[in-house]
Length: 218
Ligand SMILES: C[S@@+](CC[C@H](N)C(=O)[O-])C[C@H]1O[C@@H](n2cnc3c(N)ncnc32)[C@H](O)[C@@H]1O
Image 1: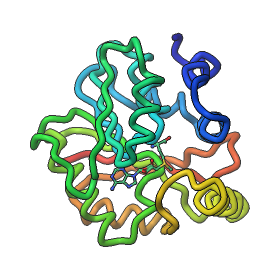
Image 2: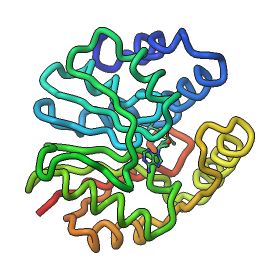
Image 3: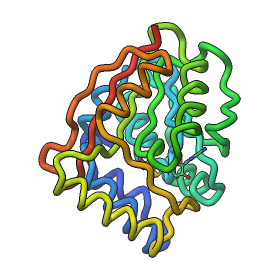
Image 4: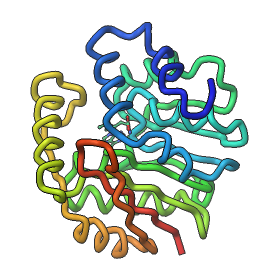
């Protein structure tokens, strides 16, 4: 699969039932997946935390064989789908796990991603997930946090509506709560958790108000 080839990436999900295929295809179209892929170091151990059906992790592993990518996800059904989608990629693995009790070895990761995961949790749980991710990273390691923020307002409205449908109608995760935060609230949380933070608006050409928070463990 070539870097940037969303069609080949989505073809890996042909085996899924239509609801899951629809969900994965929508995610692929509505976020800047390949610009996100470029942000990740091309070598080293990378963890995709809350990897869902594995869309991001599969793209990362397929685009750079030098990355050793591990997806960690709490829902067994999604881990199974991710494993099937990633078949044939020797630098990719998935396991079932809870980010609130992340068992990764201290300092063992070069990079980690939290792609649209934190908003499912209230502030105290967000802090725990971030503390666990920080512990697992080596000093100088990169954490990429991709989250919807509250501006621009119309894109925030679209994201809220879509998310409500995903959680309550399509039931794409077991969560029913949405805890979106402003850009500034995310930044101060990440700094309070011990990261240096640089924020980039990440919604160009897309209808959701995504920001990318590039975080370094100092
Ligand atoms: C909106 S989905 C995003 C999935 C994936 N990151 C992506 O971009 O396609 C959020 C995922 O995070 C997972 N998740 C949320 N909290 C988690 C936790 N404490 N431990 C493991 N996975 C978690 C959910 O099960 C869900 O699959």
